[in-house]
Image (tube, rainbow, N blue to C red; front, side, top):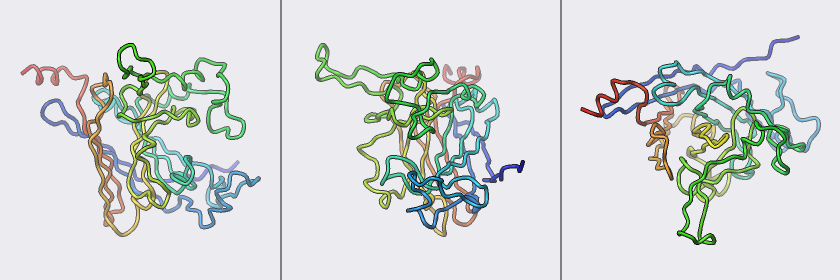
Length: 285
């Protein structure tokens, strides 16, 4: 049996502490040119074609995501609430189609270690086994947890018709897509109203968050391959405000920067530390 081909993104992680109990969590990587980039996406990325087109280098379908997980040191986990980084390269992209169906990276900052998330299983959706079945109730507790999203009441008092249910600890306007519940990851949520109108219009990172069993499963910066490769520097960042925030360590901003000279992409989260007594003393002082 042949060993599967491995990819090297030359990952690096670091944390700095700032005054006011702040943290700067940085994760950087370099695109591996061995990753598949379809040159005939109409056939290589068509989910209807059976058998699917295979990438010769690793003998996997072009449609398959290539996933790399980098555990964080325990200090980072304790201080930020983030346990690991998932670098997922999607050669054909993923839904929503005509928006994110181009080669891109999903940079997941997970709040639970992989050994815990390996228990996040579900009954698969038969037409697309990579996601959880959302057409009928899951039969296991772990499967039902994908569809347990913590929400906050944002309606007018005693006016049910005016009420909306906003996911808690996520930005206003985020919606959790029940057809985007992925085992070992969580259910993906983002703002559909502000997403790019077409794949051709997608030029900058998009913020995505994940839910599992009423908790935040991950924060994700999703960036097209064109942003993290090539001969031109790219830099994008934005502040993040959360509706009904109860998790104080969630980052108040994120930034993704590509350096064309080094070929490295750096994702930076800025937030508030949790965990150290010294930090609590600083706040009291």
